[in-house]
Amino acid sequence: MDSSRCAPRRMDDQASQFNSMSLNVVLLIGNLTRDPEVRFTPKGVAVADFGLAVNEVWYNDKDEKQESVSFVDVTAWDRGAEWAQKHLKKGAEIALVGKLKMDSWEDKETGQKRTKIKVIAEKLTPTFGTWKEGRALQSEGRSTSAPGPRKTPSRPPAPADPDLDAPQDDIPF
Figure (cartoon, rainbow, N blue to C red):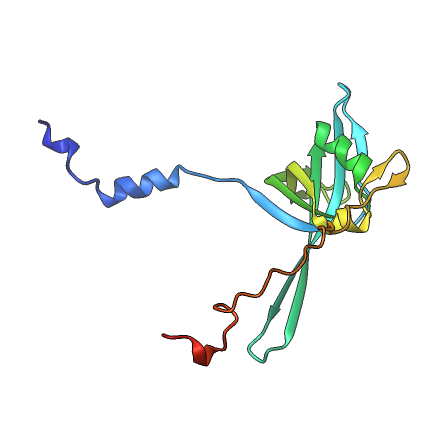
């Protein structure tokens, strides 16, 4: 048996293994800051751009409420873009899964290289609040909202059980 197979790896081998790994996943819940703007590529693929406001609320050491908002530019492609155009409006709350992408360009006025990070949406989902308020979904010109709470048929109360309804002093343990 080759003993080198059983020998533990050196720390620098383990570190280099992690240096080669990467993960680019974004999960956000927020509100649209504007209606999706849709355009089409020369091949007919839909591209939707919209802004998302992501709120954060916390309490400081003095128990005072603190708030901050991050504004994120989002791009959805193909069916996601078409869905966004049809169903989403400014103010709609959505959840999205996507990835980060850095755009770079040269500023025409200054000639400086500019960069901006945006999110490429891979999955868009309206939250319950969006469905409930009817802000996002438009179906043939009608606003659609989520159904109200389900009404369950009322049942007569269960008959009293003398063993379960006994005062605590009468319980034998």
